[in-house]
Length: 368
Ligand code: 5AD
Image (tube, rainbow, N blue to C red; front, top):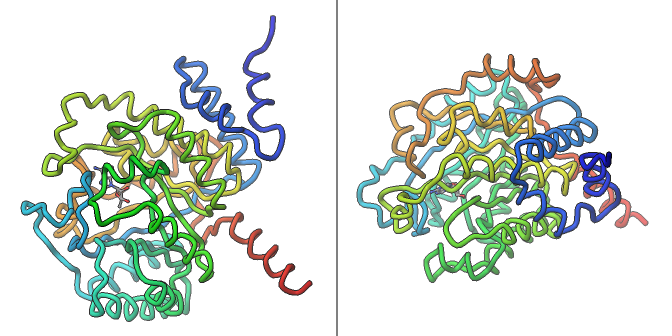
């Protein structure tokens, strides 16, 4: 009898540029339980081989839901009058940052709605400098604050941020236009990723998985996009409709099980296509099943971002319906990881090896 699993394994990981787009689309279309299980275990195998057994933590502080943008899927879009707006004061953010250090998470992510005004730019710069002082530069610092000017990105880099997350949301420009206001542009977003890379950031991007109008082919293209742009960090999560948004009406046909499986297959296929990138087990997975992020960590993801935002404002950072409000039970996560031969990288930055390889290659060219 022919062993199909074996054949599939060889095809997917044999040579550079593999899996190709066709292989990726095939993985995403996997419909049998045995097929998806084989895909997930193959992705886990590649992850352990290339990155080892550690899952890295980033405590995320969602410090403001004030947003100047109007993305059609997002619960904190400017026009959502039902969102109760907040911005945490500096001291509160720093308290949470110290808490992250105390809990030995290794890295912090600062995320907020998009604002480009001077006051905000300086506020963030000041906070970054203060966070850098905690434990004498002990914390890795990722920021996720949307599209900004090169000058702003540079200011924040110089102040201590070294990783930036800016999701492209979809690599299909026509779809991008459909889910964003007319003022947004795919090319502009892509250009921001180029600027971030040029400035020396570890560059993270990602997409929403399974939103209306998006096909399996689009998701295969998204993964090709990550590879072609040499992305260091990837954060992708399932699209979950939010009732107060133009895309909230899609809730009627929403199938959480399908959505979860597609998200996990996307993570696994991305791991096979970019073996040494950091891939996050996104929080929105939890809206589909409480422990779904563990499934993601067992299907190729290697980063977990527990929400540490102050409980009083946490419900207001309401990106999609059913966003979890409680803390991550890291004991449970650690137990599950251990049972599967994985572990948590306490106190470590856990940078993407992909970034360090590119940096070394760039330096070698410069000195040649
Ligand atoms: N469903 C899933 N993810 C969403 N995001 C925003 N709205 C939704 C939604 N309805 C994600 C976007 C954004 C990130 C901060 O949250 O991908 O980049």
